[in-house]
Length: 271
Image (cartoon, rainbow, N blue to C red; front, side, top):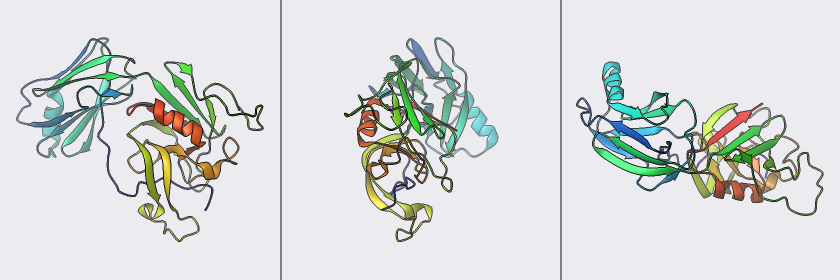
């Protein structure tokens, strides 16, 4: 089995998005939706979500006309204290999300009402992950303080940055399968998932092919980019990039991150 591989979900599906917002906030849509009936507003009541997640509204029928989409967007009024700016993005013909331009404050209660549908949920701690392709690290901060599991013994270790608070040795995509630089939001957390190369056009019996279970998988793109446990790449973590695009961690670090991060928290990939 090769040390690195690209993470791909065997069964394609998009996890439900969630909303994060600050304390004393009211996110409201006019009860009149200009004829566009609202099917659902996420997240569910009582959910705890990350600080980078958008407001997501699903309509009962597709909206394809540009003028109608603008009208539907105008029906969704987002107000907050402090005020937040953002932009609309259509995920499908019947699903629109409003993405804030900056992170919502952590540890806040949120009230959301769209077209007569209402819910209340909370933001958790601000868990921010920053992957450095050149440094082979994944640095995690919680509410602005770098954090992570204690390093295993023995120490010191031969790997760069070993034992530094919040700095996890990692391995990103090798040159032919680079990890895309950019900002992402955690879409889902899967304790165990089967990853299959055939879903991205690589036969399982190809030298680069794979089909195997992966633990502590935190998904950050719909196509199948993850932060996950990669025990087969243990000798490369912190030293070289050998994966097919994913951010690979030790089992201990991946388990800690999986248990700490919320759906909706940000992941930033840098050169």
